Image (tube, rainbow, N blue to C red; front, side):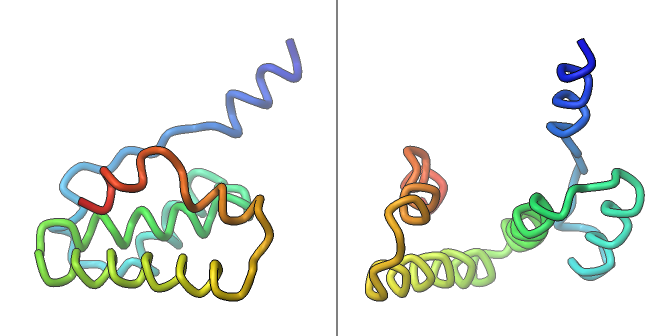
Length: 100
C-alpha cells in the first residue's frame, strides 16, 4: 500500500485552463508549478515542453515553430545515431497526430 501511494503522488496531473492567455512567461509558470506541486526533476523538462506548446498552440506561426523544432531535434538524434531507447521515446504512436 505504501508503494502505491508514492506512485500515485509521482503521477499527479497538473491541469491549467487557457494557458495561452497567461501573461507570465513559460519560465515563470514553470517555477510556480514546480514550487506548488513539487514536480520531480525527471519530469520538469517534459512539463516545460508542455507549457510552451500550450502557450503557442493558439498562434499558428508559434505552433509551427514548435513543430519545426521538434522535427529538427528528432532528425539530429537520428543523424547522430542516438540510442534506440531515446528514439523510441521520441517516436511514439501519437507523434503524427500531435504534429498535425
